[in-house]
Image 1 (cartoon, one colour):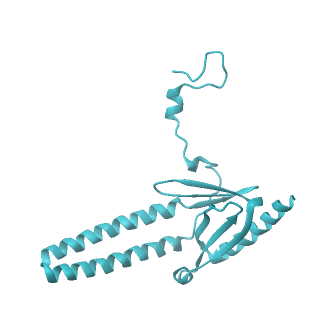
Image 2 (cartoon, one colour):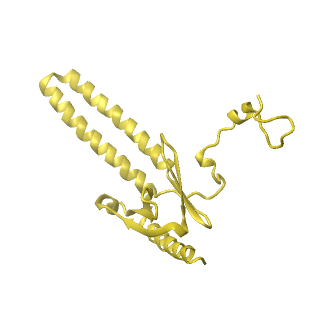
Image 3 (tube, one colour):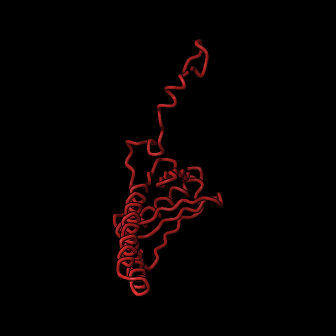
Length: 183
């Protein structure tokens, strides 16, 4: 089945259109996408591991006291399996984050189940914020947030090395001021 008549140029058949799948990661696939620091993955893995350990110990102890050792072993095994699943999700989520600095805008990609690509034009930036919570400071990483004129903008880059976050903040601020001034 054709999308247009035989005399039109630039038409494709539905079969060819349906077989060509375009991914968000196809946007300038050959370009040099930057990733967060590997310390972010380590931090998230430790968080998942500690939560799984606490749940396994508490669940196993309570179940062992109330029901017996066999169900307690089952609870501990179940929590360990969930922890391993959480660790796999953390790895995939870490791998999904990336940012690309272009001439006129910044591209941010993220998402495991729902892939998202945010395009933030430099001229629309109002301010750039760098934050680091207690755990992030222990791992020497920070989160960069971009605030634009749009209220619903969710442009953030977690897990950047502190020096990279500071460099990016300064560069984006300068580019934003230059684009807003029309330079």
